[in-house]
Length: 249
Image (cartoon, rainbow, N blue to C red; front, side):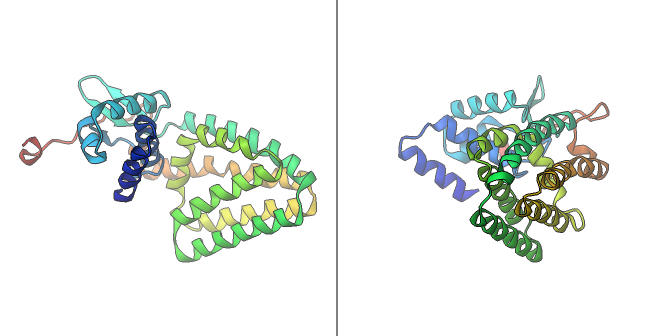
């Protein structure tokens, strides 16, 4: 967190917009699960932690609320939203539509260099799996899918996917510790690249579609194990952590 705050201060010194910087930092902490679903958020505490005034924090929380990543409960406060399965499904719909469309073009125009670059990312993922480093795998996973879209000539559309899949990414991160999950995902990536290299559009489409839909089964598994992280009819209302005398001073 200290490095992120230092980066924020440096960016502010260069004249970058404080609200945008605070928004991006908080969004990254929520999507990265540093701020867990259901966690209480205090404007005062966040402003002090980030070394900014309350205004950019308040404005950032409003933007995050519009994305459904933050919930405001009257008389209770502001909390990181629990994961909503419907939001995961909607994000998956957007992602699948764009990535499969890009892949069809990619099969037709992939070069030998494109395949080599994708396989280099796969090698990095295998290494991350061997080292038991899910965060490194997640970064390489993102690079892999962005590169796959670029192969089809639609690299600019990755930002659209990235913005749409915040809820999905929280579920994806929670799934990585599942037994042999990363190994399975790497194999699914490999199947996509193998079909791409063969020029097999149907095989590539089927492999990527199955890979992207893996998250639905994983969500059910995670929800059974950690129901408190998910929104639902039986969800308990959030509770703000009691402040100690030290915190009141």
